[in-house]
Length: 89
Image 1 (cartoon, one colour):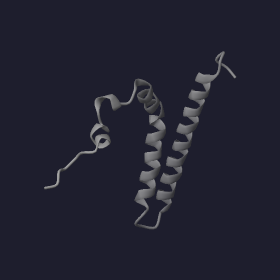
Image 2 (tube, one colour; image 1 turned 120 degrees about the horizontal axis):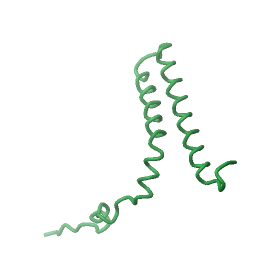
Image 3 (cartoon, one colour; image 1 turned 90 degrees about the vertical axis):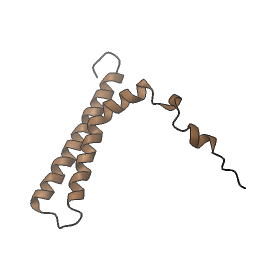
Image 4 (tube, one colour; image 1 turned 45 degrees about the horizontal axis):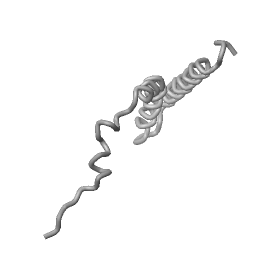
């Protein structure tokens, strides 16, 4: 008879002490507009996977990419402004 033995790492991988910290959750919250904008870009590309993109599809992709870029710039400006001493560059 063979015994089934669990692997300790697999059992404790999702233990209570492995939860994200408050700082990690704050960082995710700060980056959420970028994450959502990237999801919009992917959605725009997914729509065109099974067909030839129309002009409307191309516009949707361009708009989604612009929103993603704007979200990244806004995040960069927020993090840069927060890290500069004195408040202004």
